[in-house]
Length: 158
Image (cartoon, rainbow, N blue to C red; front, side):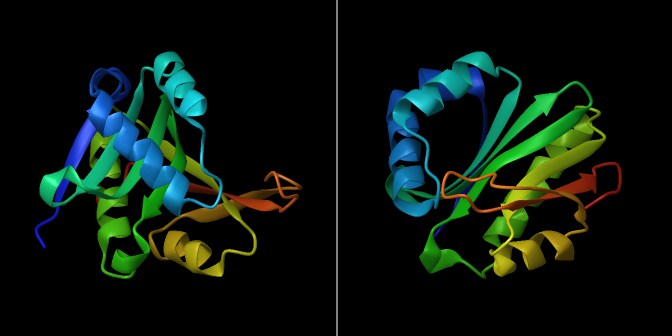
């Protein structure tokens, strides 16, 4: 299977209705806390400095994505999701790396995120990439789960 990585900003994604619908469906089928279509559209319309990196295969099938919001000189990773059949094959790392390259060119200094305190696989994934735990948010998720806050200095090369 041939996979390619594509990069979009919010306005580009809003203009590509077919891709946006595919992304929304992929999120709903594969993410523990998916957004509704309204959530996606509101986010993309109001956060024009956001970047999304999408892993696609034949027939533009989506196999993964990450969504990063740029705010001043920092960035926030809202979502990263890989098709479960492709987990553990380096695609999550590649999505992070491509995001970091874009963030460096935009002169962003830090990337932050939250991760469920029970998601040990994701915690190890972020730690292995240099993210540092800087805090904890109680009852962060809709099911009452807590989240660790992680941050990465973007200035170091990938």
